[in-house]
Image (tube, rainbow, N blue to C red; front, side):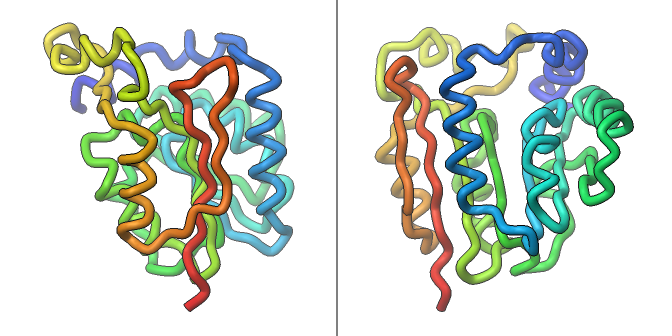
Length: 208
């Protein structure tokens, strides 16, 4: 288990108890995402944490698989699921780059608050593109730390030494470039007024 995974595994219970920082922002992301979901869809969410968002979206689709590489996070998520009783929702300990799935298996993929925590965001985006069916959507909410002076830009090179989670620094432009280079068309962009470092994007894989 690398230091980033170990960090998230260690704080899973505490993370689950934390209230959502901005309810209005979160509600808008849910609303926009659900505008792209239909009852016949198969959905994958990676970096699902303790499963709060998966539990909200899963009732709207046919099948919802949510993965996270921190066992502690998935343990909490499965506990929530046992109380919710959603047979179409499945939680699994897995990292996206090692996740076994067929090309074109999913109608939608969600990566929320996770791309900036990955070692290689470009590899992840390319894999998402492969996993999606033609016409499928990729919903991401990402911290683009290069947009302003932020403490994470300063500590990013030292995260391993201090046993903090990995943080990658890039701009909104760089994120869009990564999406477009593999073939995505960006259908929706939003920067919350109160948090200019967050970039919420819906990208679509072309039908042909």
